[in-house]
Image (cartoon, rainbow over all chains, first blue to last red; front, top):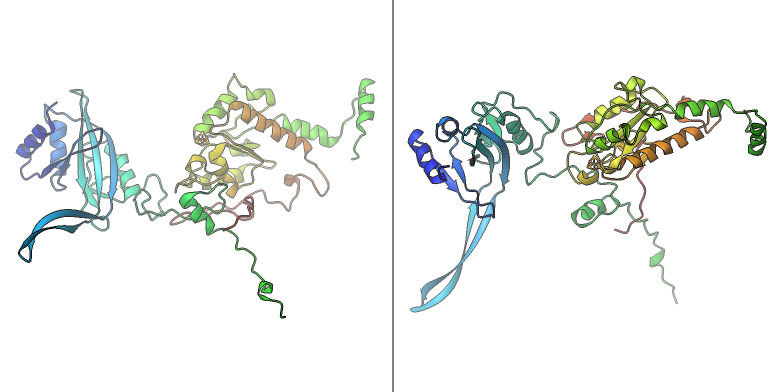
Length: 221
Length: 207
Ligand code: SF4
């Protein structure tokens, strides 16, 4: 299979204007992926599927990722001139990254027995801008999985033929796989609570009987 | 209907006279022909299927006629994970079963939510909405455990009274045989439990 850099270069040739980044994966799996821009995503997907050398005709898996707002603190030592003397000062910079949602597609080629190539798309934010183009028209197998991402992460896939909830009921309002989701509190009976479940269960403990004030009576000598 | 002295009955039986009571005969017939409702929910259902197949053979106990309609079933084996999306359907099926009806709650999931207890989507025990006769712990319980539960249920049926103040629930018009079906709320089922049915153990704890 061509390397990811080669694929990236060929996509940029074939789809003018496409913006593609390679996202490295520092984990043991070491599977870097292609971050593609939303506007050209359908064209890029079509190219990956139809190019005779690539032919990624099988989308095996689509999944969502939730990235919360992050603040990264960096501490650097810099040399500065203070009162004419050169001193080493530590400086802390804070960088703020707004949160976003991601859809990740794993592609294989049945024709050439190769893969996977992983592509990602990012939403603008986690609220109103949580929209991505649907790739169901390219890979039919993405239909149910995009519905699942819509249900659990709340990404709206534009152009999806049937975007309804799939696992939760239609009346449900939350997106349970988001990292800031809080499940309903129905832990009133918990035989062996511990850690944060214990904290939750404590709210359901029956209050101890009120003291009747007798403990305040002291003998007057 | 007075109780017969056990010794006298044995003596009579030795002489070739078999004495019984209406209640005994009736319960004997009922307990040896329990038709379960044919449905399974998750991995526990595989064990239930194994129980019904030839190796474990639930037919030895008269429970082999799995009915695909609640109208013909006596026993609901809740075998597996009850998701919140599924729970109203389970209650509805229970309501559609004719009296007398019994429920076996099979496996950790059906008892309490099991491995998914801390999740958002699984009902934490079917006994929140319908009364359960026999609980089987395990994940999954072996077929022998289901057979044991089945025998426990037979023992229960055998001991049920037909008349009097302590008669079986299905013979008491004051006892409900249908329970409200929960509805889908915005965050959870509503109500999250039926307080008339659900009586969790009270644990004294210091906060
Ligand atoms: S109790 Fe265990 S085996 Fe049974 S349904 Fe739940 S997870 Fe599956």
